[in-house]
Amino acid sequence: MSSGRIGVFDSGVGGLSIAGRLMTEAPHLAIHYYGDTAHVPYGERPAAEVTHLVETIVEHLVESGASAVVMACNTSNALALERVRSWCPVPVVGIIDPAAEAAVLRTRNGRIGLIANPLTARSGAYEKSCRTALGRLNFGINVLPVGCPKLVPLIESGQVATREARETLWEYLAPLQMEQIDTLILGCTHFPFLRPLIQELLGPDVEIIDPASYVLQELVRLGVTSTPALPHLVEVSGDSEEFGRVGSRLLSRNLNGVRHTHLKRFARLAV
Ligand code: DGL
Image (tube, rainbow, N blue to C red; front, side, top):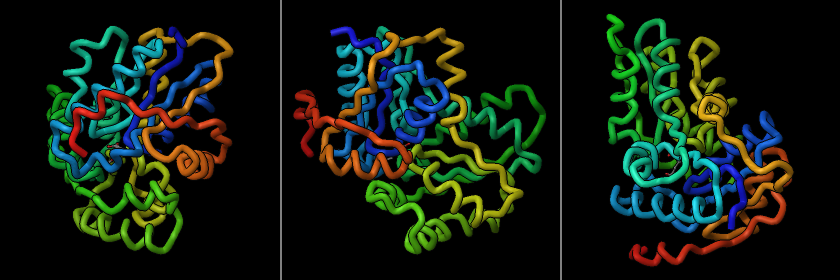
């Protein structure tokens, strides 16, 4: 069963913002992507359900031979990273700490905006990581979280440059602009697909932090590799054709042969 790929997962197409970067920046790495499209969005589910979904997916990736697992989902990080690390036999790469650290280092006025789904925004995970990153630095920071429930469904349907996407984004970004943030964390892996629109709406002076930027260096630091010359494998719990169509468009690369794989342990969840 050993496939020797790097496992990467999310509730849907969002984690492709990380998987796609790895495919481009480290073409020697083979990726096993799992998109839990049968249960997207995670952001409005009870925390215990999300934890169950996450543990089921990580088990599947490990049983399939993953040499490491990248939690390409902020909600999973916020709710289940430590728990999964406590039993997972391979390294589990998180994305919140490096992004929080980058935000703390880059902000000039200490006002950091966070856009995320409601569950991540409420969790306080980014605030906690920013405080840890600050350590003994004597520098006041203010993290301003905004829960954005309408964005994930838009991106799942491939809408990243429509008028509706722009208007919805502005609803969430306008209050942050009023607060004079100078740094914005994309606290949901779906949101990098809206990055051009976000930068245009906030203007060039606001620095955007995308957690995807730090994943490869973390894999390198951990010395994680994958079996050479293995093809990527993409699985979803929902509609595989739809995922292939939307994912290929978002990544501007052909996601061939997306498979539908239902995980039996999901059944313990009353959907
Ligand atoms: N893309 C995920 C995240 O980073 C989950 C979005 C969702 O399903 O609500 O949090």
